[in-house]
Length: 381
Image (cartoon, rainbow, N blue to C red):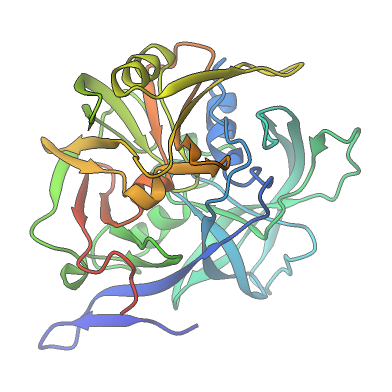
């Protein structure tokens, strides 16, 4: 793997590593990877809330390149909304350092299809092995090797449709489903990075970078604006306000909980608040249902007039880029907004990668999260 940049001091001590990322563009109806990790987190808590309303989504998810055991250059989802390392069965080759823990389990998920229906029942066995990204190696990393299983029906998914995922959320084994510390926390504890912080810089045209062990100030304008991570929830959350406006109206929703989740494609909010926002903005509210599924609230708007919606960090609003506001184009200047909601009364917003685009988001685990706008939102340089 090649590094985009490596910042050094006068003593040639590496301060951070900046790694190129790629945004995989799935087929129009492929929403599984963009929903699975967030749903698994809440399922593991016993929550009744689903976090996967994507419908005919066009936006892709962001992949980094990893070595997992003896498996080289495996593209895995970068996911701040979960904490496990999981890899598909045909991809994982154990290294000489691997240990089979002889433990098996099931990762269970709901709302896995593009219409919000479907389930996943993914069986796995656990190993410890090396996991490496850009030359930084986590030793004795607990990981899930998925077990190939025949789907019991056409609606059940049993393996990831890409290589797997690496959870960058959480700092404790108790925040994972399979046990063992999360990958980035392992790097911190083993002294592989100078500082226990990482950044995500997602462009608006499918190019991005991940920064490990520090902050790359060359990528963003001004200073980072920080909020503390809220200790009530895990793995990555903060308090703030939602602000919105367009030619029809404006408003603010105060004292909201946010989960900044790079592995979720869109933005999922509490139903009452999403409805209130859509009404104020003149966005058509559309409720869709399907057998066995929670109903989903979508917002239809004129494609050439996206609303301005922002989430605050440190009191400063950071807005969704106009190009990222669209979840789907329905034709004839009618688009579906990236913000949706499901049945239930979840007290938080899942702020996914459609918000991340055009921003540098800095995670200082486990204390605070910051954001700034990118100097070059396309990440062309």
